Image (cartoon, rainbow, N blue to C red; front, side):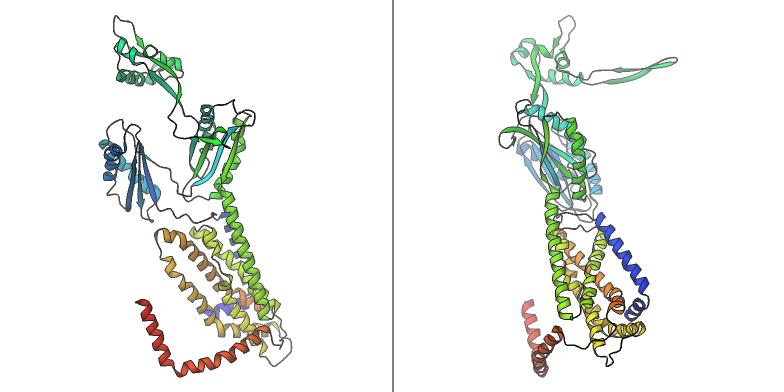
Length: 553
């Protein structure tokens, strides 16, 4: 079969040329579609359940919230492990699924089970929620908003946080590839009802009365409609509070024959803020507010950050002129540095391989033919990476070894040059004679070329069997190298013989090259050693087996 492939490639040079051109187009197109990141995402397949319960201590959080949820999700299919953290006011449960379980299907299963868990959680303590579909590498963009120099005292921490939550974050939501925008710093604006205990006691009002009044008097109610031809008038009761005065004028008690008691009679209504547990500062000088943009699991980090940057100028126009958005962490910086390292290593490695090939083959054309297999094999690998969803990163692309890639091509080209050098005639060959010479030399060495590449591929099979964190870290490397070697194998049986027949010199040249002199020297050293090894072959095999057995032990 290999003979037929080589013969077809030599006889149909135009077909192989067109297929090579299609490979280049496919590879270049795949590069534009390839997911690019700095390192592989080794986060396991997990879903987090977060419950905020502000009034409970850690022991109560574990007993009343975490334990009931863990019990309800214990029998979910595909579950691998469950771990939890119960702290003051917070319960975080991490549910890890097997890698073959789709994360959205896993979230659906957990959502169904949470309905059962909510029945076992005391009312009013907290509501379990699912964390966004993101990973440990999901923080792709971080920024702060702060006043310009000279306007530091114009905006307080509460106003800056309001801008972040209601202007910046709201416009970032909806950007493709974003899972969530988390806000940090500032003061979270709240309506506060500061109860006066003395007034409560004097007017006979309890705190539950205030809770009930606030809850019942802060809602809209829909009704039917009155049909007045040709119009229909819809009935609804407007009760949502829109200002502090609306809150102040909510009735707490309105007994018949007595004066109504309003919220303003027993409490001070004002704007306040949630309890702060820290602060975000700009250069350690002024209070600032920031945001962290979380990327959806499996998205292309470079593309997501690019979309965020496209939106920022529009968002900036929505803010006051003296308030600016300033990024301080951009994933593309890390990705660019990683990709520059990969490019530098690939280019340097390719140049070294080309130099060594030209030097030792002793033929500039032969060196260029072998070297041309490097970018073609790389494009083939990138195309398959796009097909199989392998991201381009420091681990996957950085592992490519050009010496392995050109191995089969070197064997074919060197065999062709050697075969041409054995010709007694010095007359220029015709194209038909050149085709026959290339086919004869390539077919004789084809098994060695293919076998060598297959052996290298077999070496990477154990890495492909890795699972868990190890698999996520190292499998992309093995896959990429495997794709590149497989592409090089195909090229060595099709593209390389065609190029040799077409571009190698058709006039045989009989001269000793650096490679010939080196091989002759090695042959003189190696032949006596080989003869001695054959004479003691039984001892040699026995010692080898003994060493292998000892290594197993």
